Image (cartoon, rainbow, N blue to C red; front, side, top):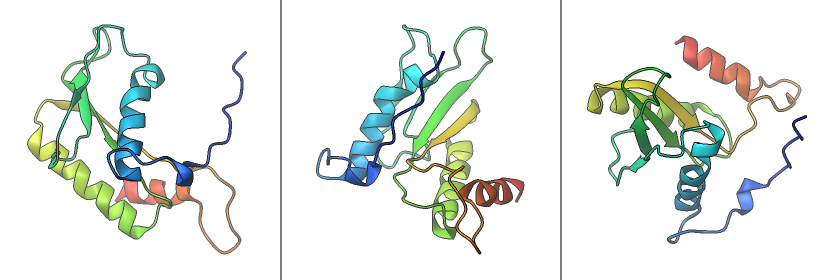
Length: 133
């Protein structure tokens, strides 16, 4: 039985190297191997700024495809048009700079499935519409 995840207020994340954005990047770097169930020997490679749309990456684990898997951490508080534009730019930068890319994931401190505010669409619906474009 899987226990529900605790509710965490990422707006209060402690700064790392002088910024909450860097703290989010560091936290995601530490958590991705467990979240993705990467093999113990998997080596994540960090990219320094400018990162070409990729925060960190690793070769696809054996038996789970070919090429390179990559992640982009975005410390955003909502999925608005500006955020979606940033994400789109990162995605196309990653494709352009990494021809062996076969899997790309964003890591956001946003619950896309959160309740909808009357008169507004959910973050998940915004995401789905942006992905279709």
